[in-house]
Amino acid sequence: MKTNLEKNIGKTKVRVFEQKVFERLSMEHENFKSIYGGYAILLSHWIKDCYNKGESVTQVVRKINGSGLKTQLRIRIKNPNR
Image (cartoon, rainbow, N blue to C red; front, side, top):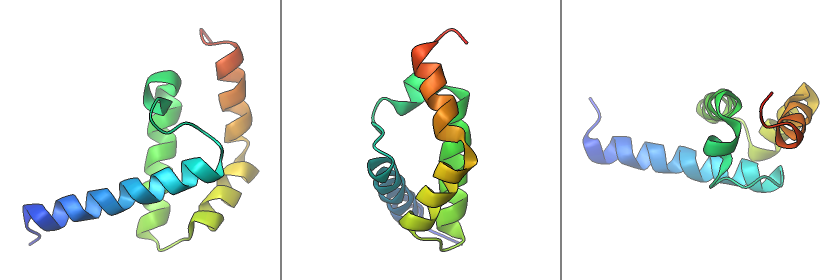
């Protein structure tokens, strides 16, 4: 069973990985959850899943870019009430 310290270290590693993905996507990580709502949750879980599978930042960025999700996020920025 993992200790609280081990759990916190694991969460920190995932957060750093997520930040690197956002940097490569040229997206602001800090305001992401408040701006994108459900998309933020989806993307966060997707990135965490990829991290747990041992995928690299580059692989995750390619998947996201190929998915069309970034296009949906740009639409959401232009039309926030959508």
